[in-house]
Image (cartoon, rainbow, N blue to C red; front, side, top):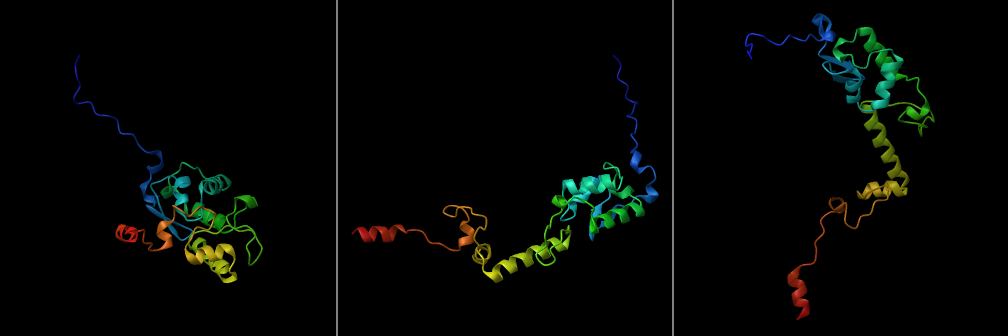
Amino acid sequence: MEVQKDKQKPKIEDNNNKDNSNFNHVIRVANTDIDGNKQIAKSLRKVKGINFMFSNAICSLNKIDKNKKAGDLTVEEVKKINDFIKSPELPDWMLNRRKDPETGENKHVVASDVKFFRDNDIKQLKKIKCYKGVRHMFGLPVRGQRTKSNFRRNKGKVTGVQKSKVKSSKK
């Protein structure tokens, strides 16, 4: 058996990167930088507030290939994605802020708005001093977890029983 040393593996060309002049290494979607080398469905999930289902809905409703690299998107496709994120035409159960306490409407918030709304909701709970608000104030778990053994770091500095005191009390 002869071993061929001169034979090299054929180079596999990436079909998506044939024309490198239009390739963007970073694209901007919903005030977030997205890596252009990843698939668009996966890279959209880097935006805070966009999950797997929402990114799939964006791609399928805008007729964009989910396996297409984010850097290969045209300017029109990026504009379509941004417009869709601002006003999604999806069922209410797919949105992340349903029945907003201030306006009563269903909407989907992304990027920095997620943190802003969450912080405002917690401030409102603290202000009206409901049970969840009081638990937030004291740094205790809010959703009914047990606290006997867990959440020790939230309770603050606790000193245990010291052996010298126990021995002196027995005498």
